[in-house]
Amino acid sequence: MAKTDWKMDDTVMPDDMNQLGQEINDLNESVEAATNTATANTIIKRDSSGRAKVAAPVEPDDIARKAEVDAAITTAASDATTKANAVQSNLTTHINDNVKHITAAERTAWNGKADKNGTLQTNLNADMHGGWKRYSSLSELGLTNTSTIDDIFNALPINSILEYISPTQSAPLYPFTGSIIRFEKASATRMYGSFTRGVPDQPRFYQSIYASEGTTKWSGWVLISLNDATLQTNLNADMVDGQHGSYYQNASNLNAGTVPAARLPAATTLVQGAMSAADKVKLDGIAARAQVNRAIATQAQAEAGTDNTTDMTPLRVKQAISKNQEEGIWTPTLTVDGASDGITYNIQAGKYFKTGNLVTIFGYIVLSSKGSLSGSVRIEGLPFPVQGLLAIYPSFLISNVSSLELPEGVLYVMGSINLRATVINIVYKSNFSSIYTNLGAIRLTNTTRFGFEFSYFI
Image 1 (cartoon, rainbow, N blue to C red):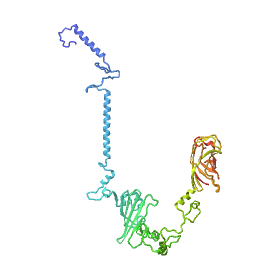
Image 2: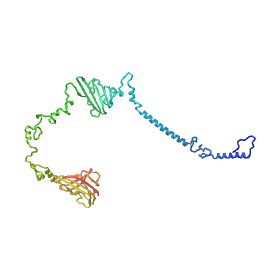
Image 3: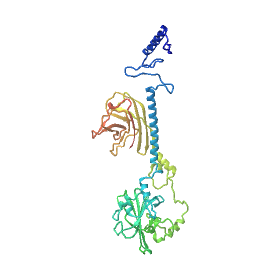
Image 4: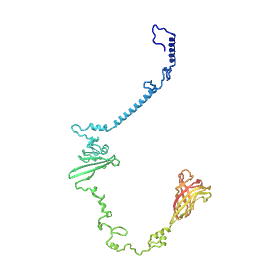
């Protein structure tokens, strides 16, 4: 290192100058090695934009970079936002706390609380009893003496009572002057009214009902009781067990007690009534379960059902019923104009029940091949031909039908039977036509299904 303690009489030697030159050269190299990048052991040099970079800080007194400053700002901003939101939430909760704060209505009530002279404030909660609010004048509800019953109902809150002295007589709302009128609103649709008038020995009590959903909303005032010797025939006091006195004028309505014989009609073979004493003696003289000249029907008589002079026992009844009942199996066969070539089935089942001359049919067909025939589709094989005496052609709706290629607009598929025949003709009805159309084989598919049941006479 160059000498730094020169004195005036010192001699400059070549080595001294060389040392100075070396240090100048070293310093120049350091300056020329300056850079704007984060390079260790070099001088910081700004770039053309006046910027320079340093390594990420480690020690508290290291140079802070923009990245660390931005991160610190973002963290601080987020933290500030979180804390501000928490403060705002606490403020909102506090503001909405009706325990710590009073509502506008409560403020009005408290601002009008009794003063030092003890003046009563009727809009305080102390004015309520059992959860019901009381009003002692029309003006408390914003009403006047000219307000209607509808006005009172609309103004009176639910679970509240209005009680006041009726003003100058103005029927029908105020039929009498100076009466204590009371209205109780128990729900959004019901209000009950009452008032009392008269003198101590002749009180009169009136009631009314207001139903907002009714066609006639207000019943008007109805007299409930009075004490002036006037007969009130429409009072409940005129009723026993919910019935008026006229109900008990009919002896048949009595279920206990003694009825004079004169009140009951005499019994005949056609009319119920009282039995005479002579008839009672005759009845008492008949032995229990006595039968005179009883004759039991034979099996033949029971099955024929024409004899009207003999008795039927349970056995004979069963024999008569069994004689006229029959059940069995039949095989429904699908044909096309009477032919069945190439038609095969997955299911082919039928059953019938016959009672007398009435037959009930059940049939079920599921095809596996429709064949290649053309013509009208029928179902043959009914166990009994249709009766021909009444000239009525039985027909029925085939409700269980599927896999038919029907034209558009078909409403339903039906079966009809010609008189004295065992063949069902299949037809369908379209909303585009007023007549029935025979079902053609072209409408069938290899999975067509018919399920049906109907009854007919033979």
